Image (cartoon, rainbow, N blue to C red; front, top):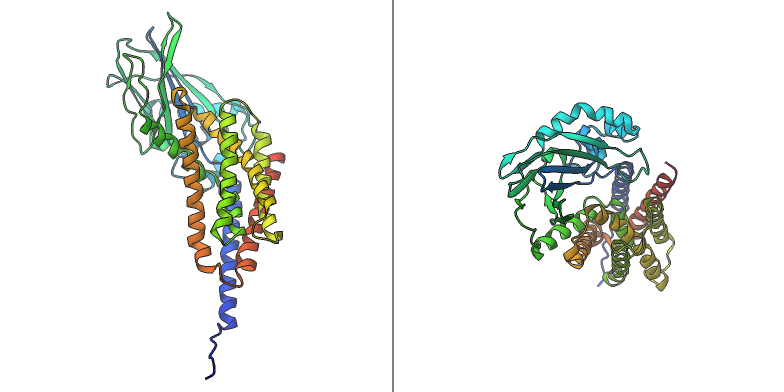
Length: 396
């Protein structure tokens, strides 16, 4: 008997290759567009209630995002219909941005709500602190201060920040000026257009349940990867593309995890502290290196790769620390919050790997053209974006 061999027509292979190449070109153009975007951070609200009968609210938010209606619906600013207006505002000097925000003040104070014992308190903006345009890859955060008088006998406080303004996190401080004492509550992470749970003002705040701390920081860590961590996503995809086998991939992800956990903890403890204009370009350079190394690597995994991934993980950990520094950490549950944040980050990274595997590797990893059609173009795309970001974060 003669063995019958079934061959796929060359035209079919060419069509498949052309289709995948077009897909990669589309992804590259999309990512380059995103590379120029900001990711708007959730607003951070700190409310101080003074026993003398006054309140002070500090809202740390992007005025540019507020003025253009860019909120949590958009993964990045380029997806918003007012992206061009946002880009115009973000380079304005502080005094010009303050002038642009002036007509919006009334709308802001009407839409946010501070309630004491269920009664809404009139709000008034007394101060606006706007930094000058600075490092371009870190969106400018301004501080809106609201102050006024309250009934000192109030026992509960609730806060509402509309979803149209974005997600937010809030905490409350009781201040006893006579005895020079104060006490911060834990953070409440607010989303889905819901007000806060009532904060007690009649006694010292009790410790937040462990489940609440875990949930808050787990979500924060996950969201820092998906959807807000495009640079970390590209680094993970760069690791993913080098190997079609699970074991070497897990070794690299483990090295990355150990490294960023180490520097995240040291940064949050105040042991190390590098400015963003150093850390961010180096993170971009790490992405470029991983992308280009994939193209020229001669083995799926060697010891030098693990060392390199570990060193780059140290940099990414300092990038994660910038998020936690803005959000703050509960003093009485520091390790719980830190571990929960790391677990959230890992879940985000695993989600990226799983999606990449189901989208590409599960179908094409055994194809003879997988390396030249998927790995090489994809890695070059990641490397070029990393180089662009490096240049952008240093020069622009």
